[in-house]
Length: 83
Image 1 (cartoon, rainbow, N blue to C red):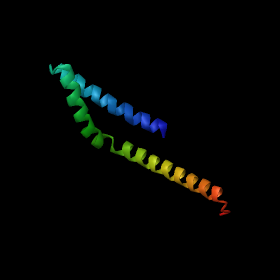
Image 2: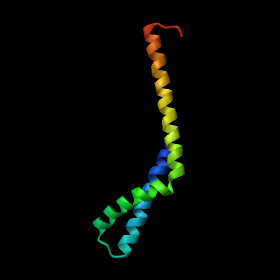
Image 3: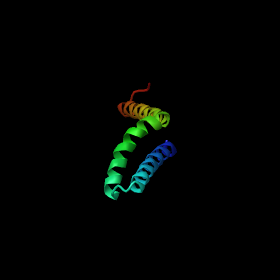
Image 4: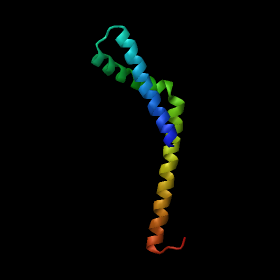
């Protein structure tokens, strides 16, 4: 899961960098270019990285389910239940 999260994060940051670069070439001031790029990249990443985000969501859900099951197992053990 860590590698998938890192990939998704790096791709989103690269998207911000590319949009910022394009805006700077178009002579938009740096800070304004970064702010615009962050807003645009948020929307674009929802569309461009849909598959990657779905895989990440699935892995996060699986990790939550494993933690929930382990927590329940530990609670049963603390109560002294044998099941």
